[in-house]
Image (cartoon, rainbow, N blue to C red; front, side, top):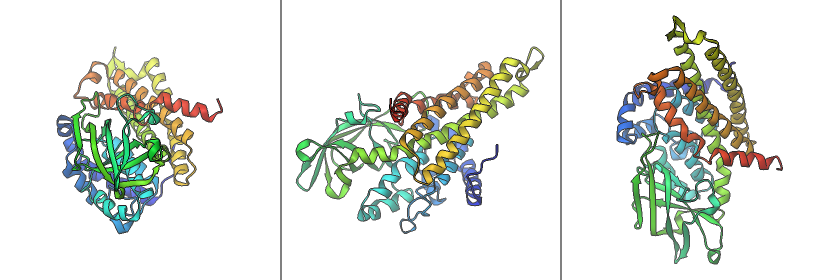
Length: 379
């Protein structure tokens, strides 16, 4: 079914993104997987191409494109080309909006130009040992201290935590200092900040993920995002776009899986005929193709709703859990059809299969997503 949400400028952007990724990312996939992180030189090249922070205002070096269709195109092409790493979705969809929507003008002038030109890698530190999807259980604290705040605590599962130059840290504020939660920006060279180990993951091996520690880190008032005490509100307000971003990736990944499985089912023979001619395989692929088509229409509608400011938390949560479940199902079927070869690292489906598993966990587990949707029903 033809997609109708894109205009000519989005199609042109897609062609430009695909060409750039095929030249600058695809040839380095194995290298980045082996080293456990994407080269910073690639990030600088991507920024020069206008693929980083394009939603920022032109005065900061961006293009002023606050149109999530551009984000979707970039995410889809990352999937299509098999590019590794989550840098684009993390920066453009998840972290940058905090600087665009919450940061004071002076903070924007200080930080956004470096983010857009690729000099500053950004991350957000929310998850902690023992907290996971429950943001209200955050134990990291920020206590008033003279002309600023004193930050103490530990974070884990921080995407791009090894390379990040600037980290937004979510912390609990004691009742004596106003209560609630706050968002505090910590440069990586700040005294008391320490990176822990780079975490070894099942998948997404090219994306550096880290533990971070904050021991009496001084955060001046000029590095506090928004109003202290409203941090949880800020986090929750951006989660719909974050989860939509994951759904966009999931549907593109599921489409890749179905297309790859169909192509392989036509060329691979068993008992003298293509494996796709067996009813069990043919029916399975027919079912998957139809389910992915339905998911594509729903996610495209969510993209339109996000652009018009109408996407609800429950709709985004539903998109996230349903598409990421479908993504893994599709990749699992694709791997199964490949037989023993699907389990070999030399076949790309093996990497995509293990990379997809985390989608059902991060950004809020799919169990939490179902809880959000269930509560929206008044249950």
